[in-house]
Image (cartoon, rainbow, N blue to C red; front, side, top):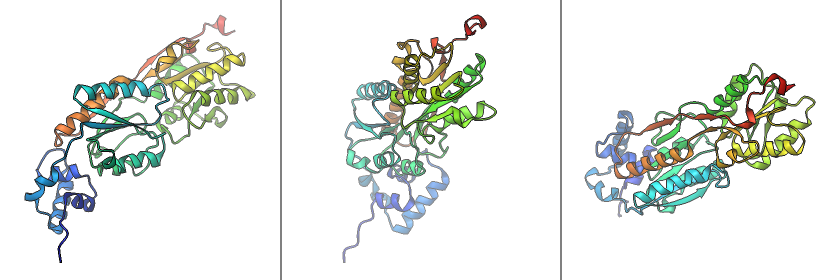
Length: 339
């Protein structure tokens, strides 16, 4: 009876880690904890895997392609990120395969599960749903992963490079609206579980959350903003400021409030997040927080390409400083104008 040959994939599956992690353990490379290495070597011994024959198994036929998984290419900030990833990849002789996850938890996980089928050498992923299994799936991924992280704190043990923000961008919005004297501040966002840190900044910035001043729409679109404006307009007492989860929602709010005869910023101040192109050309121009989309996308791709070339290097955590850009939609009004 012929015995099944034990492969590195078998070892990775039994140990609950990715193939690259097993490779690091076998080659005594950096970027792996002593505990994880010990666990892998125990599995190697139990399964009878021969490290001296692993070199052939570890050879990866590079495709010169990487994947980019984003929530929704229709969101105006995503093209900036995608463009920067593509330009960085081109400089290194790589192509980019783009995937839209629609911010769906299952699609985010499916992207990680099906990396082999995509025939790529690595993945840049921008999560939105952050399902509970996400980090484990990243750790078990068959190729290196780089994470663009705008929504949630991630584990220090995550086996991926992470690029994100050093400060909570939502806090910059709330601090600004409070500083210009707004007291009845509303929040307009997508489902509560999506980019939850932005809603948390709203909760933490005020003494008490009035549920009537919170609107959760279906997505991050212009139409969600219009629906939010309709809702706030229907209240007996309208808010005097609205913090929008992103610029597309903010633009939708401004558009609809103008149709309803509500003055921005005289009656209601508006501020969003992303600093996409349309925020600066809408009338009035919209206050927004720049999340450095182009810079974040470029660096996430650069870190991934570096890891493809040097798989044993230490994982990097890079944080950019978000910047509040004050525009016409939330300028501080003088008492005379306010009256």
